[in-house]
Length: 379
Image 1 (cartoon, rainbow, N blue to C red):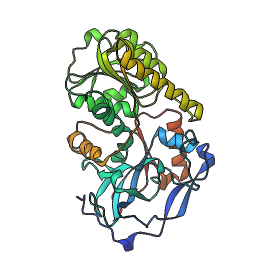
Image 2 (cartoon, rainbow, N blue to C red; image 1 turned 90 degrees about the vertical axis):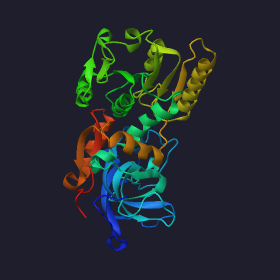
Image 3 (tube, rainbow, N blue to C red; image 1 turned 135 degrees about the vertical axis):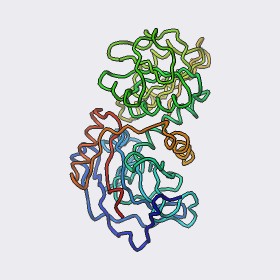
Image 4 (tube, helix red, strand yellow; image 1 turned 30 degrees about the horizontal axis):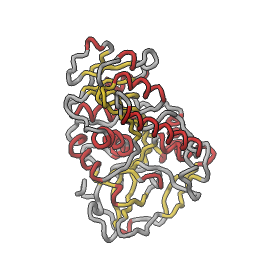
């Protein structure tokens, strides 16, 4: 499948490209630079694909990788090209690639190996899928990590997939994963309540939902969402005994688990993307502490009186998930990306990346942060 019948011959692929170069772990202004003479990764295995990248996104996970917060477990040889989420056009394929072909417009996440902040990126075929035809490259690049994380949690990781009538509470509805989780859940008929700061309320309204502040006014209409400002109220106190099926924690913090137990039904699910520490720096001590907490909560999920199940979810991309998101959620308009800012390195150079990383690191983003690498109409 192709869009606009775009094709590229191997003779048109340059030998060098512009790419971000990470030279160490640390502050982005100290360890990241742009280089216009990086070799294009032309050598492909039988199942790899070469993509001309038009747009990429900057996620909190990208910040952790660059700043060295997870260097205890994930280490790079420098210089290294960072970047996971990408959208672009396939320009070369390995001999055994079956899912995509040259000229296809694709989107996906390159995983912790990165390579996305470059004019060309090499990826395993399994990391990519045809992008939604109704979205721009910038919009498509905003999807893979954040949206698929929420998709997996709600439809594959929980004890029972979210569906019509499911009572779902989201901690951090204004986060990128939270905004996607809201839309995915509402698309299948779930009742959704969430925490959100006053600063980010407009994001919920931007999606077209009516915000309800008082639970007595909530009549579960399709376009209504009950919102609790976490800076003013504890959702556990506000909704105690309301028997929610699932609490999805997008932002982390031990208090979310404590409060969730007050609103979950017996046997209900708590699923977190972050865990107790919203700003972890990976170390042996952190791993031991997290594992001990996880085992303790798993024990009480079996032997405790309420049997609340505790899940810690980590993204594990498949092209089939991206295909389902495209066909059943994005192309029919049920889910829409929310973009905060687009940074263009053609105009602003390395400052575009500095600003994007700093906005993400400081938790100022209100939607997704996008790096524009090439104009969508360029050949």
